[in-house]
Structures are given as C-alpha cells and as structure tokens.
Image: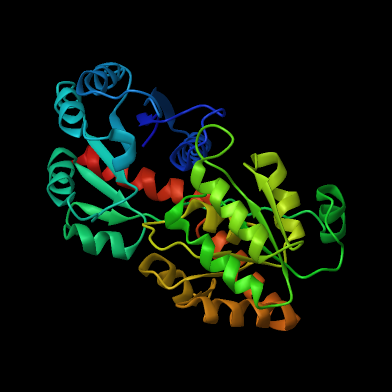
Length: 343
C-alpha cells in the first residue's frame, strides 16, 4: 500500500532507558525504510500517570494525517490507564493495532480481554503469548526484530574495557532486577573457571538498592572475578559482546527479551533459562536452555571449553537474527496494516 501512514504510541527519545523505546525506534526506522510514514505519539515513560494524562495522549494522535494507530502496550507503561486511553483513542474512528509486549500475567486477564476488544488486531512476539491470549483470530505472532551486528574483535574489546585478554568470560547485558535471576548466574560462575561481566542498570538513575545488594553478593562470592559496567549505551555494545565468550540469561520470567535477542544479533553463544519464549528459540537451535544453577554451570563450562560447540551455537544465533531481522519484521507489520485497513 503506497504512502501508508502510521501513528505509533510509544515511549521515545534516546535518553529514555526502556526496552520498548528501543524496540519502537528500530521498528519505526524499518517501517520508514519500507516506505511508510511513521508519526510518533510520545507516551510518558516515567513520573506520575493518570487516566487524564492517558486520555490526553490519545487525543494528541494526528488523526487527520494517519491511516491507523499502532500502540506499544505493556502493563508497567500504562499503569492501569488502559480504559481511559482506548476510549479516548476510539473517538478518532481510526483502526487500532496493539502490540502486547507482555500477556497473561495473573490478575491482568480482564485487561487483556479489554485490549483485545478495543483493538482491530493484536501483535505478540511468540506462540506462548498467543496461547495465553487465546484469540488467534484477532492476535498474530510477529517476532521481536533483530539487528545483526558484528562484535568488536575479542582482543581489542578486552583492551578497551580493561579486561584480561585470555580469561574465560561469561557475560550478561540487560536491565537488572530481581526477576532477572542474576543470583543464579553468580552461583553458576562461582563453580567454574571463569569471570563474570555484568552490563546493565535500571531505567532511571545509577542504580537501586537491589543492584547494590547484588553487587555486594557478587563481590563476596566471586572475589576478583566479577565486574559491573553499569548501563551500557548502544555504541558500547560491540565492545561488550566482543569481550565475552558466552552470554547467560537466567531470567525467572519473560514474555520476550530484547536483551537476549541483542546477544543473538551479535552472534554470541547464549544459555538461557528454560522458559516458554526461550524454548521456542531453542527449538530452532538458536541457544541452549537450563533449568537449575547446576545445569547452567555445566553448560557454561562446556561452551567455554569446547570451541567447536561454541562456534556452532554462534552460527545458529546469527542465522536466527538474520531470519528475524528488522526489515523482515517490518514487512510482516505492513502486511498486517494492509489487512486491517482492507477490513
């Protein structure tokens, strides 16, 4: 469809530390490369949130300049203002597509049904989220996009970060909170011959009380073998992923993980907890899974010791990223938009 015009409601701005902001910017650029016009309607990421503010965001959609509205939804973004937002949005009379970045959280099922009812189509990132919604007619799977990138050469990356050139190194890059399960990663690294590099922080500020406690625990359990980098901006990612030998994601819950997909995009060997969204990628050979800290330690040790196994997993990670690159994901969105508008 020529001159497709989309209003995207999402957090925005390079200064905003937010996975959905990063996702939306990459999707918007990919859609523009396909010829679509994307108008960003900024959703306030932090600070006080009320139904009145949500309604004002909906009212600010440039209805006279767009064909449809694409909402990037997550419970923590909207904070209970969904009903006010969607009711105001419907006043424009435009088709609405909603990407639900999280679904099926206990206590949120009625809200999920409301969003389904208020949207002409819903996007989720994997089969598990689709099953949780139970609405295959209105919802469809469009994978979270990947941006295949080359890591910095290992020796150069380690020099830049001030790391030993030859030490086996396990990495984690992403936001840090209790649900990320980093205590299990610390315990796994403790029993193998490796060091740990942790890149990440919180959405605002230099850290949290939890991050301070995690650092103290890691320094106690891994004396001289752990380094925390803090929040890693995009331009430093090639160095961080070039420095590490394997990457671990021990999250205890996820609907999807942009951080994990970033590791695959850099062609890193990944070991992640055996959760439904992770299992779907493991079925494609893109990563390995684990269930216990002991299994995590064993698999990390094997990948660090077996260069052939690690290289095979790195090739599989790159292949996954190519199959789910942002240009392909943008094409899937455009087909969805055209389907919605044809109805």
